[in-house]
View 1 (cartoon, rainbow, N blue to C red):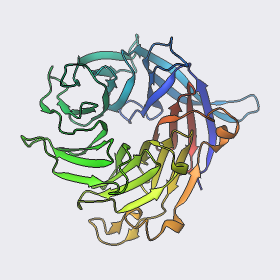
View 2: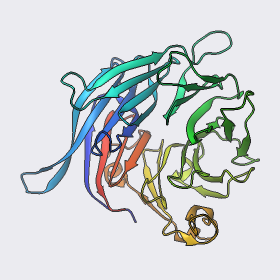
View 3: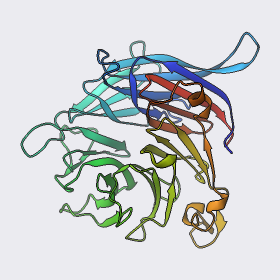
Length: 363
C-alpha cells in the first residue's frame, strides 16, 4: 500500500489544469502549475506559477511541507499543456498558441522569462482557432490539438520545422516523444497512434485501439522511463491500458480503475516504474504498485510487471492517495485534472481551486 507522512494543500482561487515538477537542472523541490477558467472562478485570469517546496517545523515540533509561490506570469487562454526540461518551460493554450519560457532561479524579477510564442498554431480548416491540447519537450517541442494536427517546433525558429496537418480526423488529447524521431498521440476515438516525423506523409507508422467494442476517448498517456516501447494510457471510462509499441493492435494489459470514472492524467514513477499514478474526475489519485520486475526476455534480462499484469493482477496493489482529504471534503465532488510525481514528491490539482502536495512518499 502507498504510504506518505506529509501532506499539504494550498488554495489558490483558480482551477488547476496542469502541474509539472522541475527536473534537477532547476531544483527537485520546485514545480510549475497552470490554470483554466470556470464558472466558479470566472473572474480569475489564467497564469503559470512557479512554486518552491520546503519543510518547516510546526509549533508541535512536527515537520510539515510547505508550498511557496516563487513567481508567476499571466497566460492568455486556458493552460492545456505544460512541460519543462533543462531550464525551459512550454505551455499550450486553448487559443491554439504555444508559449516558451526560461526559468531562472537567480532572476531578480519574475523568474519566468518569456522567450518565444507561436500564435494560432492550431486551427480548423475554416481558419477558426482551436485549442492546442497538449505538448511535450525533448530536443524540440511537439504539440497536438483539436484540429487533429501535430506540429514540431524548433525552440530557435519562429515557425514549425514539421507539421502533420489533419493527420487525424479526431481531437488529439495528448502527445509524448517515444524516440528522437517519433511521437505517440491518443485521440477521442480510443486510438493510440505513432508518427515518424521524418516521413513526408501524415499517416501513422503504428496504430492501436483500446478495444474494438469500446471507442471511449483516451485522455492521457505516458512512457516507461527506461523501456520507451512501453506506453500507458488512461481512458474516459476509467480503463488503464498498457501497450507494447513493438506489437501492433491492442494493449498487452488492461486494468480497470476509479470506479469507471474518466482518468485525467497518468504517470510512471521515474525511478520506480513498477509504480503508476493516475488521477481522475471523481476527485481521486491512485497509486498502482506492480511490485518487482520479473526475470524474462528483454535487454535488461527483466520483464516489466506491466507486461505480466493479466497473470499477476492479484498482486497489484492499488492505494487511493486522496482518501485523506476526500473524506475531509476538500476534493469531494471536484475533478482532479492533473498530477506529476518525482522521487518522493507528488503534486496534483483540480477544480476545487487548490494544489495538493504529498511529500516524503515511501516508494
